[in-house]
Image (cartoon, rainbow, N blue to C red; front, top):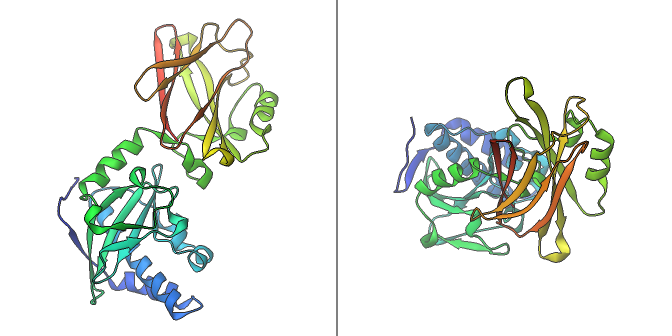
Length: 309
């Protein structure tokens, strides 16, 4: 069963939630930091409770706010949604008309959920949600009047489930079926290692198995995507898409094509495997929030993978 709400939602805080909050707060160096951690913890647990009601999986133990070292250093109230990303649960104190965005939470967040506290800490109200795609990188706060209803959180989760978020790879968040390149059964592993390590800038490479063809002619092919951050160019990211044969098959099937489509569905660059090609690739750059699709086709079979930067 799923549930969406257009109005603020009241969530009652259990003694267990306060136990965690008190334990984490007691670890802090100052009373001010302890209060911050206490409220952040309650906000995260409240949002986790709501997401359980609507059958959305969470992994609170993988969140930075659940890490003693991270919560001691940073002002974080994040909740990991596996294969989707991090949701930031920001406390709104009594009388406040906006909530603060610490610099450490302005990147790698699918969005921000406002959690309203009153003097009585036995319950909170979930006021609404703001998509991270709407937030400027250095925006310091969000007005409560600007937030959308909780319905938009469901829409945002649905959107993220359709796309592989490449920027999240730098934060260690990977979608189902995507593996680090060194774990893939690539035939030409030497070529793969050279391609994925040949960069002086921060980069990360992951891949997944794509089954092309059918019946006795089916062949496992590896799609590898390497992302390289070019911080000196306003966060532009270089993308390298490669296809490799798998499972000790020496070559890609002749005629295999890989194409790049923009977010409007228009075709851009293309590469095609010839006889005795053991890999093919395409390279291009993307701006933050840009979407693209990798289309692979062999004969009449077409497979598409959607990405967002």
